[in-house]
Image (cartoon, rainbow over all chains, first blue to last red):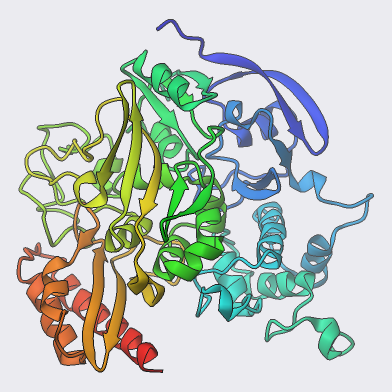
Length: 191
Length: 329
């Protein structure tokens, strides 16, 4: 079969369309960083293990290093550059800043995008490997630190800022150390 | 990475036709395994046929069981209320695999076809009978602490890495597929081939077949089921041993039991010998251990992986004991 090994594609990133020719071997991560100058997403391992390249594709967290750019055409991509709301840091970003959820910062864009996914997935009632009983009648699991650690396990932090990262995700999700909503038990002022 | 053509299939017949037009073409699902292997040169397709947008993304109830399509993501499968209600061990198995990001990308079809994580298979500078038939198997004398103890051969001792497939094996899943000649299906028991002297031939799928989905027959026993996985760290690692189990105990007697092991063989290992030993007998820890030993009597561990024998036996006893206690409540 005669084949073409490159295509002109249109990527929809952070609400904006980018039309560019790509070699089919180009990953979404390389397209973001090298082709459209969105360098927030980071390349760590380039094999799906570290999570530094995490972005949201059609609203779901995804490692962009294993996503071919050509296969992302027609899907909606959100990178760390696109998560702020009206120029204000979103709740996850603000919590990472307030609670020192990083040291060197290299993994942070991926941690932030992943945490946004975690909060959405938990709100949708998804269980995790840390959930004792996955049956629906058991109800949605509280977002405890154990649940956050399990759900964030696809994001490595070489500086090991994990303790603060877990705190930041809990803060952004609005839960206390027992995974209970902060507003409901009035602990917010004490936090 | 070798250059490749790319096409997005619009429907199942079109996908099968595109694949069969090029002997070096491969289907692309979530890409979490295939793209990784292409980067390292283990996989060198000339053409990718993207099947992610095929209308195979539904989960539906059929005759008291479930049917889910090949492009259902691992995340959607594990989150589905009927999966969690009727086959909780399947949801647990899927959730025990990979990371949240990868589960959002990976598909049912791709999970079934993912390749072994044997380090020699992944390293193109090494011999490997699975990757390069006839080149040899360095794992047998080399690094094999996480390799097979059951069903391996002198040609290959690699394990199947899937957690999902272990639960599917326990629940008699049937894999459906489409070829240019029409549809077909394979029981999961027959889906993965014995290793023998052809470790490069991993499944009984006909050449050019596209997996379209998985059917799970009605299995009331599965409502009380569990998947437990042992790994070298708490999360995001492949199993060193795992067990999917379901138990129906009535008056202290095992009425029905399902048992499958992961990370012990080239395929998910349905423990039918153990099931037979347990059925009709007492639901006690002693009986669970004896049944596990009966299953593992056929094991042929290598120099550095005999630890999997007590590991799997203890997993069986622990998980079945938990299920028996839960049944008694």
